[in-house]
Amino acid sequence: MNRRREASQPPHLPGYAVQRLLGSGGSADVFLYEQDLPRRPVAVKVLLGSVDADVREAFEREADLTARLSHHPSIVTVHQAGVARDGRPYLVMEYCARPGLGQRYRSERFEVAEVLELGVRLASAVETAHRAGILHRDIKPGNVLTNDFGRPVLTDFGIASTVDAGGPAVGMSIPWAAPELLAAEPHGDARSDVYSLAATLFSALAGRSPFERPGGGNEAADLVGRIERGAPVPFVRDDVPDRLRTVLARAMAREPQQRHARALDLAQDLRAVQADLGLPVTALDVDEHAGPAGAATTSAAAPADATRVRPVVEVAPHGAP
Image (cartoon, rainbow, N blue to C red; front, top):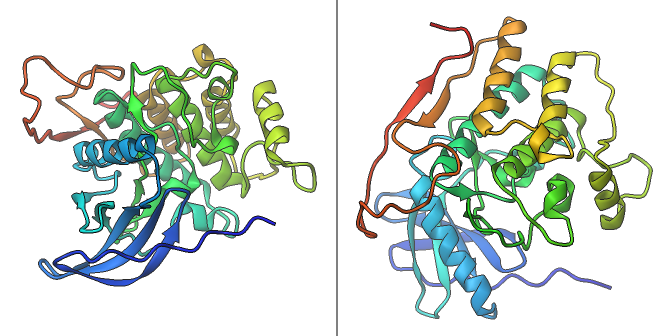
């Protein structure tokens, strides 16, 4: 019988006092610490000491990529990264105490208005990552936290890659993965993240993952087969408008070329649904100075150690002046 591993001991970190364990994953534990100065609670992700070099490299990449993106209001903020005295790398992030989407989507009924706002905010985060040349590759409810202001924030860039990297997304979560990432020779691009984002929104509306069959076989092989066939299990909700269902169906099309090309395009369609329903249209925060989605992650014109703060601009909805 498989058992969950015991959590590791939290490391001693100067300037921080450990409070309790928040959660454990396959290669890391997350602890709640109290920072001395400034005084605030923080979440500290600590890599296990027994992991191999590839996992350690992925962890270091997560620290770098998340820090590069954490100026965005819908991406978790990274405060610090380092190596503890016992040799374990750690990542200090903002602590999101409120229940996240992963804790809520199966037990709560999400109103359409909340899902639309959630989608626009997350799409702005994904678009910003893509413009920086970064694919997330594991967007799912469990990676959507809620900050102290009640806003969703995207986290866990542990298996992220540059847009032009063609390797498989090892560690991705099958229920929300795009079909091309489950192929014998996995390949993905920005449209794979668009798919996973739409699948996450589908889950918020349905109360389950898109290809989960209530009362049926839902093992990994069952889910993969349904994902490859491109037929999400329908859900019954009279309050979900047909236009929203159409938007999600397009974003989750089996063939990537049939999906929205950019997270920005998905966001604009969601904003159009908000306008149709007479709801407030959520501001879309995108990086004004970054290149288009799919741009390279580095520039020959800037030194590798340069730090640039890039402003965020609001994009008006379709048809707005």
